[in-house]
Structure formats: structure tokens, C-alpha cells
Amino acid sequence: MSRAVAAGAEAAIFNVYRGDEAGRWDVPDQRAALRDLGIPSLYLAEQPHAIADPVELRSRIGDFIAGLPAGRPATGTGR
Image (cartoon, rainbow, N blue to C red):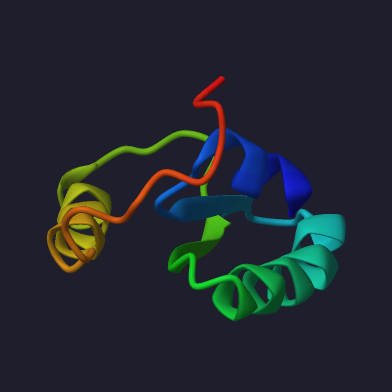
């Protein structure tokens, strides 16, 4: 999580492909750590490797971004 803070992350999106067991284990703890830092996240679980129809995915990501608080102060270097 130090990289997210150092980068000044305002949010995070976790994209975990279908069948990626490691991602399924890691993401909940990572999301909790980000939440504790006040960084919102979106968890896209069980994503197909080939997206045939991106409309739903675009909508979920768009809704997430639209719901982010505006003007979160930067905490890092922005690298």
C-alpha cells in the first residue's frame, strides 16, 4: 500500500481474471488496507480474458469513477 500512497492514488481498480486464485486471495486484504487509508477501490472479480461486450464493464467503472470524491489531496510524488 505504500506504493499507492507514494503515487498519490485517488482510487484503485482490481481486475481479477476468471480462474486467478491468487488474486482472489490477495484482493480482499489489499482493499481493506486501501480502505483504511481512505482510498476507495472497485473489485472486478472473475473477469473473462476476452471481453466480448464491454458495455457492462464500462458502466461499472464509469459509475465507480463518477462516485469518487472530487479534489482528494495528493499525498505522494505522482510518479
